[in-house]
Length: 458
Ligand SMILES: *Cc1c(COP(=O)(O)O)cnc(C)c1O
Image (cartoon, rainbow, N blue to C red; front, top):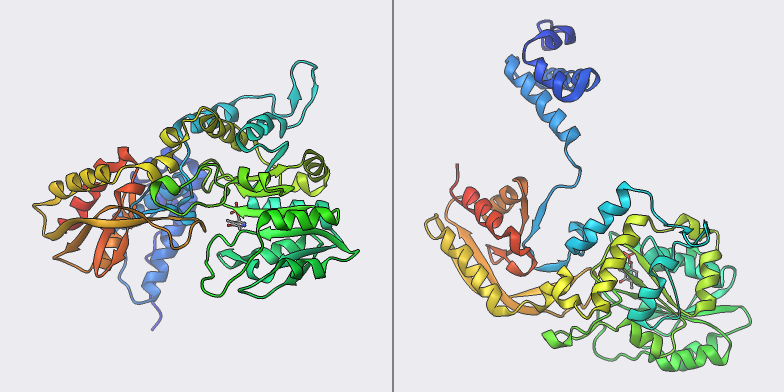
């Protein structure tokens, strides 16, 4: 039997009720109407599915929640307790506070983004950070675009559209969320010529593929996976020699693009931008928000003449970087220039934090949870860099493990994600694992409060 909905109130009736006043004040007439309509629609659907009529308070609660959701900032604060430093789903590298202030300052006022103040005429937005990039990487030329994928697209479009680009079969990588770099590369209008096999590519393979149609040789850093066993790849310097013998540019998609070594912290190092350039790569492409620890950006670094060609290509306009990113990138690079990156760039602080400090923090969390119905321990644990960097490499430290005595581990993790701030954890061996390394030091109090709230139960 169809539900009898004749007693559903009219919208006008709801708007006149005293409870509507708060909605009207918070959202104005249009939004109040919208969320009350949604509440009525939800009640109608619930009753058609066999539910009972809603009390007025429930209708207004529904509308209030919908309004709050509409007017809340879309990005919610998430505490990253996963131990994955560059968690792409959680926004990759957190910015330095000074970089964030520079973003706000650049955003709320006019600036000399593309304006030469001395001469009073149009300038180049890339010029703002070009010198900082030169000094931190040794590149003669530098440009910044939206992200590394855009840097690859633009560079190949500018240097090799309608031509062939030689790339090793072992370097055709998928970077996450089913995006494949070869697809991005083909969109540039260049034709990819794959050489070698998945596990082995030799210099002769590249050599034999060079023809009059070749526009560039591309090396892609296999950042998010490792091929082990019977493998062979060509050193950058040898590849650069071959490219230059034939008058071709060698382009390297480095992905992460570290400026510092991770070796001092017991982690195999990512190839550094400056090393690739020294080895003869003509253009190095990398991300701003991976191991550099800055804002989302794509850096194009190397030969001045090639960078000039790249930034004049029409696509450069489609992938250009905004002023807020440039402001944040400049401050981040200045920390490197001062030799203070490890102290000041949040990502590098997380890499460098001593294990003893992690243990102390985890112990403090544990002490604050001792009275709750859960088995809570501090144990040695490992963090990973993530973001497609350094697969298989770990940073040793200490983690907090929690096995709740009430409710499942999955249910606890879900409650931690649902609260304010949300806390995202790992689950291992039927325990919650919280890694203090990726929890920013000023979030310790919130982690403890959220755990107390969730473990104490209803
Ligand atoms: C991460 C990565 C990219 C994409 O970088 P974005 O800045 O996310 O666009 C491209 N190539 C490689 C090798 C990568 O590791």
